[in-house]
Length: 436
Image 1 (cartoon, rainbow, N blue to C red):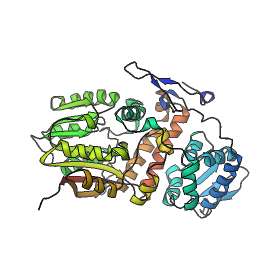
Image 2 (image 1 turned 90 degrees about the horizontal axis):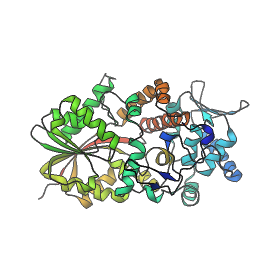
Image 3 (image 1 turned 180 degrees about the vertical axis):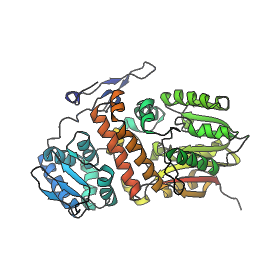
Image 4 (image 1 turned 120 degrees about the horizontal axis):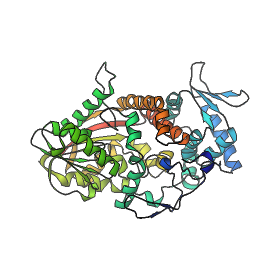
């Protein structure tokens, strides 16, 4: 296992399961191997660091938080019960923030430049003011001249998608099992009133998607994005036959084992296949939180595939994370901490962008929708608590402290976004537009 002293190593190659060597053309973190290229050393950019410090101080002055510096200096408008951010190494923190704020803020948490005892509570006020923390003019300058752009090899071509999925979903089935519930659902749950039972909420979510697609006995259902087989199992238990697609070998193997354990393996076929390679015609199509991994350039292809694969009279059950359209438009080309460390190649759509793509490239429209945004905040809270409770188990799997802080930041960062409504998630029923 790699130690902190190894953080600046860069691997020139990576060897996938088929034995072929993939060249590394940029510094790619490999969390499951403990490789964090360049992370150990803060950028040497004193002018940018001073600018970042000035902007940060101005931004937090009116936020309901308390920021504490070494020596006791405090800034922020938070009272005694407000979340506290302790900046342990101000020089390194502002250097990372100045180099690229969209990446440096998370990286500085990963290495301990700052700490807090309430990560989602601290990040929530930042998320609520995300679009105004930095003046718009400076945001435009940063996007053009300072901030990183998406590496070419992370674009979601057929080959790029496989690599992007591999980097996240093939980390370790055992890792995901530590913080997910018994259904192994890695998407928003849907809680019933008065209930905080995550398993019941996930089953309710799955049934909600299947209902949106009208799945019933005797149907042949296509699922795009297998996960670990929870939805396919439920659809088969309804009496449907399921073909489900994944790009993750790790997920395929565990999904097949879980399907066999549930006694429905004879009704479900798991294929290691991209949605662009899918063939056939299906009574219903379902896809849960997969569109976020497609990329703007491939949205037309993705939605056209839903249309192409659906039989006349069929319906699509789609669950998708969304963000406000204006924010999506200005940030769609950004390369952020989430891209670098968690979801390479990802982009969250807006409801408007989904509607536009459906209108332009399909015969489908949104016939029904429901929002689960606050349910996602609760779901992420469950995941984060389970992950923190099992930190020793995560360590035993071979993941280092940098990874554990990275994953904690990822879960807390997302929870904050859903808490304030900066992010939402919808279940949609897509049906063919009526012809007049």
